[in-house]
Amino acid sequence: MYGGPLHNPAFIERLLDALPSLDKTTYATLDRVEGMLTTALEETLFDDPLPAADPKDTIPTMPPHTLDNHPFFFHPSALAKVIHCQSPPEAAVKGALRTAGYRATRSHTKPGTVKTDAPWTVVWEIMREWVRQKAPIKESAIREGTAGWGIMSQRRETTDEQKPDEGEKAESSNLSLDQDKLHLKEE
Image (cartoon, rainbow, N blue to C red; front, side, top):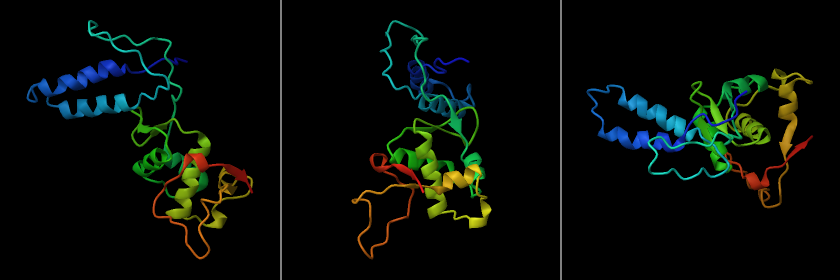
């Protein structure tokens, strides 16, 4: 399996910089080209800084040993199927991941997918929060012993600063998590 870079960010940036100077009558799908290039650029989630491009290079080289440590993506509807809930919108999932301090983007390979550097514990916590806040499920929807039951039976540990004061209701209007306070514990 190939583990090297799929895209060359410096090359993509050069293409994006050149797009405004192109004739839209000659290139009728220029907006679509810009969208695909932007998606490809956003999809590069390298942990290490990339080497600076040499201005003399027509096409800047990407070191072949550069690894994308987050090569996989997930489909929110597939996760929703596991826990038997309504699928959250892609934008809501990406927003929750970004609010939690992780990078999140769509993948060019399949519409509606999310590529992130968040660990699976955070992804599943976001799905549990989605169920709690926006898409409650019937208790009988998940059978004991299934993957969905195991995922839904986990809960977040709360610190004293996270607990609401007596009589105060916790705010639940959006999907937001603080990654520094996110610790999962089996019930």
